[in-house]
Image 1 (cartoon, rainbow, N blue to C red):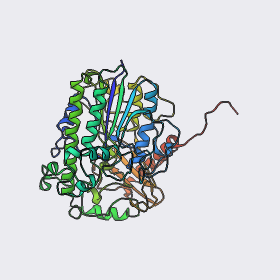
Image 2: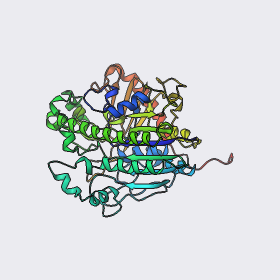
Image 3: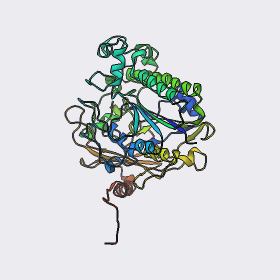
Image 4: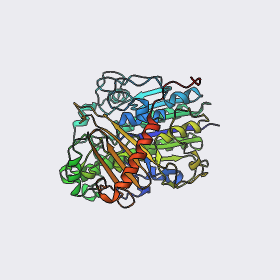
Length: 465
């Protein structure tokens, strides 16, 4: 019997925001429970630090440049390859989506549907009332007598009962209950907006987190010098000190948003238990990319590849089928999620998919300390030049178990970090004479990987000439 799949994807959530994985300042008892009952990938990397290219990548199983979808705000999505939910739906699953999809622009329009495989579609790109039609969340708020724009401006902010994260839970509960007696397996993909900026949790959650209790960002005064060197690169925010960013207050609000996510996520697990679906449901918790949160003098996202931006949560749970309480610290890519989903559904991965299934690790059949020799992330002119700080930057990250190489290809700039000695990336070794040999070797390896993994070879070969 093929399992159901509950695929919960937050937006812009860093890897280091889970209590059970070492953060004593967050409140995540539900996610902690998932860690205790499942497998947590602690070194999972997105394939772009920007929404659309990252989502395009894990929805197709290809690097963003290979999909030809590397920007936010793009007009359309390529007709090929099909997204994974289309393939899974064709195999007999009933697939649903709640929240944002963001494979193409939702600016000044509701994101157009593609051949996505979803028979249940509840769309909400963001918790605003910017769409004249097709915004299921805003319509839900209005049906309950709420004014979303007015609430966003009030001192109380949008309360939990009207919040987009709550709406997503209501839709998911409806979907799970409606499928409780069904014979077809289902996949439900929830894509909530939080903890994406602006950092405005409901006041009831914000009041639980005191800025004075927060540890603050990973920052040294030398970061201001380093970021000044990189100031020509795309980014959504200006370089500032933690005090100028009011970073501890932002961190408190960010953790408050995650606390609300955790509470709403608990409702879904309770529904699975109540309907008897838990034992045959694979639960996946992840995010599309991270958030700078004041690290290195930066807030939000853009063309950088620091750990807080490209390393994300990735947790799997399936009672009695997957390992319980396993911490996997091998290098993983979000691309691997695509191949894993295909195998879970009993499907063969098409040749074009570039991920490596995590099923052997999940089932305890392979070494959790090694999955890839390296992981990659890309940033190719991803931000709009008029609204979100884009100036047309191109960068790639190549990360091995020890080193991280970042090359900004059109700027003559780069970064190199020894993550064993310097896990929070304060000491850039790019110009260090002692590290020139390893830098040149990594540049060669990164270039080889880029050519092999992202070159589109065109149509398939059918004859010797």
